[in-house]
Image 1 (cartoon, rainbow, N blue to C red):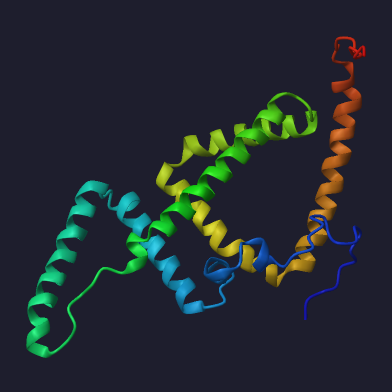
Image 2: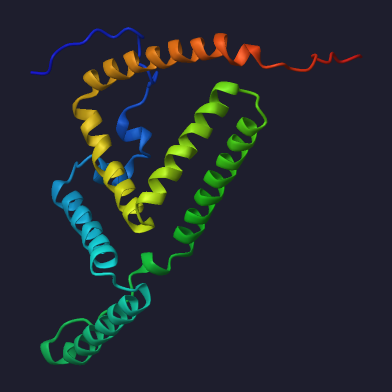
Length: 214
């Protein structure tokens, strides 16, 4: 039985009204991230770990690896196609999902929407409309820069995958405890920002506010 923590902020620090499954988009991807099908989720984790091992530890190059995979696939298809009449089985076919125009268009639209939203949000923050968010983004980018200088791009991708593949399931299991700790951390950050704002930011000289004349 998990310990009970009082909720100081009603709906939690994230004010979440949807389930974790819906926040992750629902469908098969959410099932994998939340380990609804443990065999499939474990298979995805093993596959990603194998890819990371090949590129980071063995230092495989992407072009030779793709060529060898293509050669292996062509050999399997060649043997399967020629052996199919002998053993009375259907020859291999190309799965429709691989060449689906709708799937490619949906992926492109999703990427375009996410990219446009991210650029617009960063532009608003860079304009200084919300000084708190501006400082938070600058600090986050500095931390990310330090992490990026210490690890390779492949390791960073694998670390991001591990976080995306494990943290949602852990949060769903220990939701009450995480919400309680997040609420306390949020209050500490707010108090720290108020001290910075009163001791430093308010002393920064700013130009007079221009009023619009109708």
